Image (cartoon, rainbow, N blue to C red; front, side, top):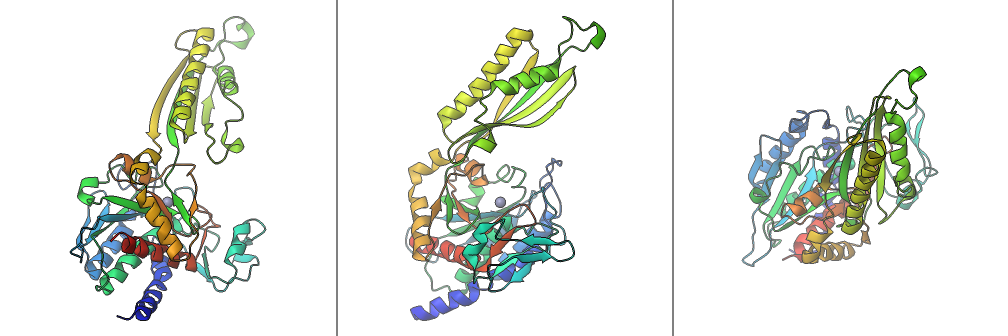
Length: 419
Ligand SMILES: [Zn+2]
């Protein structure tokens, strides 16, 4: 086929990616941290089944959905060459933070750079005064919410982009490629997307999650993360006779918080700066419970932070008596950088792919975790690539159609560059 014709075909098929996305966005797949089941909500299976039927329809092989709602499929190699098996992964669920029910995506064609009225009745406006990045998309076509739900571009845009890319390859069998694996997982938003991911069954040499934000994002560094649960045992006595008797656990909690570095709180940190976040506290004189999350990209600093927490608790126990403060620290995930660096070519390939399709790569450390981080430690190195979306997890979420199209082109280009 003539090159110009391939280009034209790409344009036609890829220009449909937003239609696929809108279909998926209308299916409610909100996950639920309160449930211990997998998937945490049955409704995630509605999208999983839809995806399975589409993958089957395209002629992919080994299309499966396991009992936990993980969907996997394979597009076999059509080449005699030794080409690594590449995986692409996105998640089916949307964040519990905001409603994902009855999502009504709206398309703003040829955006004029002005305020976008999401909902006239409720006076909800998406404005470049609040979100200045909007101005970068002047002249492009945006998909927004109607102001009452999230959009779910996180991560249904990723799902739609991956499927559109493999559909393109299915329809253009003359394009040479190695084996491509795709997977769609439940419960990423509640931190469990990697829990039951069968890395052996997936069988990829490396993978990419398509779960980032704005166009160009390419991420392979994330926090090291732990959670610290603290219980402070006080002694409640009648305040009238409390002298030298009462131990107020709330006061000790305040003392504990004050002993941690003030400048190492999320509201004072950015880029590679780690933090302690007290995100939950419940207390009475008798008992106070505190929950902290501790974060740092640097493993050494991360360990120091955990150590300082232990030293603070030790000090308080010395001051107020043994077992006054109980501490349990658990690791949540580690920085994937250590697992990606030995195969840094997979990041470089993604960078080259972006440049080749006219996207400027934006490499930055994730101030959080991804399923890819967990998968990387399970033996599947998995950096993260943009979906194109903005303002995830809320009513101001939006995604430019042109960014979605670029994401599909990046996926196809990675496949092309890897052969
Ligand atoms: Zn996501």
